[in-house]
Length: 131
Image 1: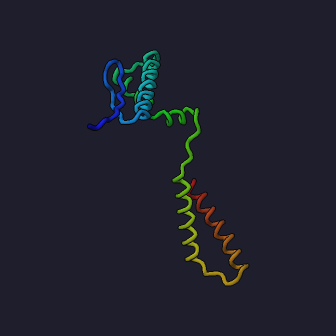
Image 2: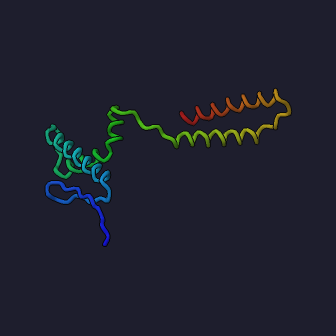
Image 3: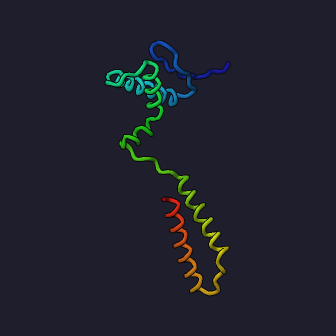
């Protein structure tokens, strides 16, 4: 006989959702609590919303609380790791195209000069892409 543990979130006497782990159930319950608080706030505001719009908006904002906090400037945006990878790709592709366009240096002075020019061109390429 197999035994399964299930965690059920019950709201107002109605089974809302079932989870296999307690952490997910607690997160969902917390999100619903936030949605309830937002719904009460909206109902007390001067802006008139239908019940369905009030509920949908409350749930949406509760589900996207991190983005809302960033939009309200209450939290700093998360650093994007993918952007760093894009910079590496841009740098690599810019360096590769520069290497192809220029002849290979023959001595150490020419190598150092080429490296400085390459870095300057990559920086210029990044600035032009950023703007």
